[in-house]
Image 1 (cartoon, rainbow, N blue to C red):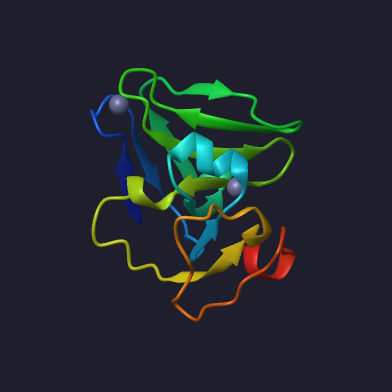
Image 2 (cartoon, helix red, strand yellow):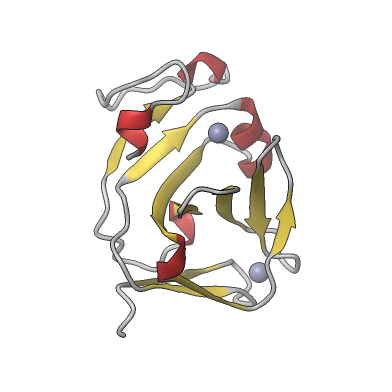
Length: 134
Ligand SMILES: [Zn+2]
Ligand SMILES: [Zn+2]
């Protein structure tokens, strides 16, 4: 099957192909994403079975039941995985252009840092949101 979308880390050691649809992007402002990415996380998602990864990904158990995947060579954040869910979340900045995606909204804005404000008029949720994350 032809990949629908491709992406990878900054140094090129990890590449991935996505063979199915990608969800539009959710910005997560939680403190865990803030520290792990240096700002907020911008995450798309795809069915786990549709994502084919080449190269070594290092996984870090960040919160109970979740793990973050990154390139062990350059440190680029690539994936966010909730154990047992059928979808793998992908850091949207790692996608090759054009992504064809739009930002859909913001979650965990209760944890937002104090050096920026959200001004795009998109939906904001204080914590997790099943509907936005679908
Ligand atoms: Zn890398
Ligand atoms: Zn987060």
